[in-house]
Length: 128
Image (tube, rainbow, N blue to C red; front, side, top):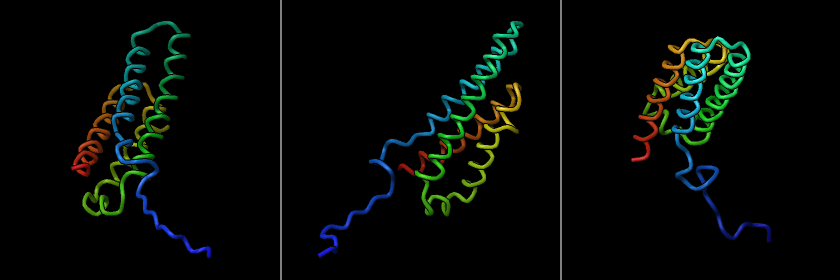
């Protein structure tokens, strides 16, 4: 009586096609832009606002990366790309307190963008 009549299988939260590392990249580009604007300004209020926005956007980068890492990528992806966990770990740390949240050094933002690009390459390879 309580046995399901239909078995349903799903592998992601919503239909495929909603995940994209571009979301993390856009936020990382915003982080870099905030750093550049911070460096170009002498207004302490503007600089404080740039830092606040940079930190908010850094959190958003981490959120987008975490969703990809935990929801999109599956065990077979990690088997095929053994460096994938390391890439995500390094990228989220670069978006954290030891990375873009804790500095205004544009070089750190460039490192974050490079990691996101590496993740993107793997992401799009898994979509083929």
